[in-house]
Length: 536
Image (tube, rainbow, N blue to C red; front, side, top):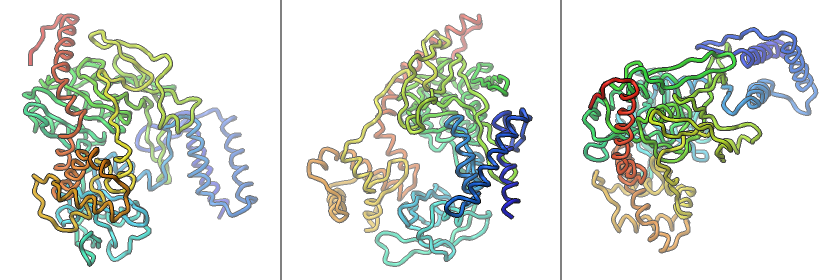
């Protein structure tokens, strides 16, 4: 039995090693030919070492764990920080995220110690319609106790075929007995464009949180509903967007560029150069554009930001982006696992490589302590502006990263509030447990603040009157946003967040500069090509 298992695992190693040498393309795995001598000797050595470990190690060895959690990830880690091996469960989640939909009840959950807590139900989802609230503790799913289960295990219990029923038991602050919900599962969209609105009369705002299979289509719908052709300006928010599918990044950039403008290119050792152009073009949407980025803007998001910057189509505002310019080809292996292998590097229209250096530094330094390149690659935009490569996207208008005070950080760390994007925190559960009457015009008054300090006392959270006074506006905003999110849904909470977002307010102020940039670029392009300038 052990010999058969070892043979199967060795096949996986051979397949993965071949992939590293030759590349994997398409939805299924395909090993390409490699020099047989060195490869066979390496695999033989690995198999011999594994057999010695399995028979002689001081305790019983879990061979699956040694292979799937040790050998293969370790091999990929030597190559670059982004080539990744997925076990069956992780690969299934990856495909689910890429498809932009799944079947279940439709809510975000998070593990807190041994409990699983509802972060927020998606607006309009079965969980939302049933009355499940942020902060509810999931006690049982179909009668199975959930204490001690991981968030993934609870999520698996909640998912199931469309039209099937699941019974959910929750605990809620202020309720003496558990609450029972009977929820019918449905198809749950995972939108890439998770919010859009008017932040000012004539100024639109669109937040893209992910590039999945539906993002381009969702952007088109958002632009139509905002009547983008007649706006005075548009803010495209790519902050904290870690990327996703290349074809969706191309589709998003296509929506703002002129037809036939280059969006991105990529090439690698076994991957010939491929260039992606705007196929449809902006279809008359020539609204001034400001793009917000930060240090967690990465990969597909940087493709969009880089293309719009190189063609002077948008003013890029915020902090330097992460700097991920490696292209991963994702393939499913025969045993249901998956491999995301770096097969190429991508380049912006001006020829910039966005990838920042990762050699000779630790993964921690690469991930959490990015450093600017010593000699950045300098390129020019269409209008002749200098832009820089090999270190992420450098904003046209740098803004300092928003900083929290030590007291604010302490409140978040202690669970008094969750970070704003997550949903609702402990104080909100406590406050809503008293069943107050909440309208969309809710603003925390002095009585709410007295309940807030009483809550801090109850939870033994240290504070002084000066702490409260110096952070009063932030505390009021957090309470307002999280209470509104809990009662009326995430979208209403987003609106509160935007009203107090200094970077969004700065983007509004910079809209005339974005218009001037775009108008100047169009004039230069018209002079260069001899084509007449078409006014909006």
